[in-house]
Image 1 (cartoon, rainbow, N blue to C red):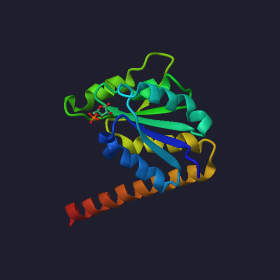
Image 2: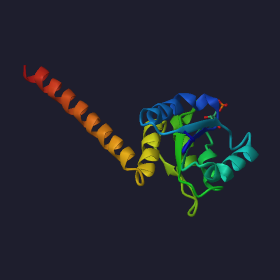
Image 3: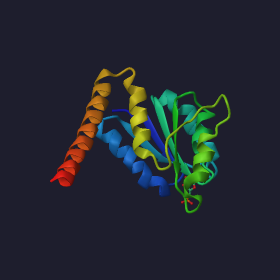
Length: 165
Ligand code: RP5
């Protein structure tokens, strides 16, 4: 199937975070593509990627970068597809650098920023956007939440059993 979500990262060094997003989209059977292009090192390629994404059938873009993380913003500047930004934790500043660079977009060019290294939530948010028009995907997301809630309740029950004998 042709990809409808595009995962893009500033460097292959961001791959560990993006693999979590990829795994989740695989689990949900959402077709995706994955690329590594840099807003700073390959600006023309990023512009071309963003400008062509809609005509290639992409519906949501997940963009991850670390340090002076301008990738999500640079992509959002060149498309009106929804762009989800993931700030990646770099070698210093604990990801605050990437968080602020990704989230503090000027009015008019939105980037939906998830938590630092938030690959799972980025993938879930992309699926939720797609699920607005896809009842089958919405049902899968509901089932996933129910399963997650059941795990929490199971762990709480085990904790109570341990505490109360
Ligand atoms: C950013 O700079 C990338 O997204 C990466 O998080 C960071 C470091 O890149 P490398 O020097 O590891 O390629 O653009």
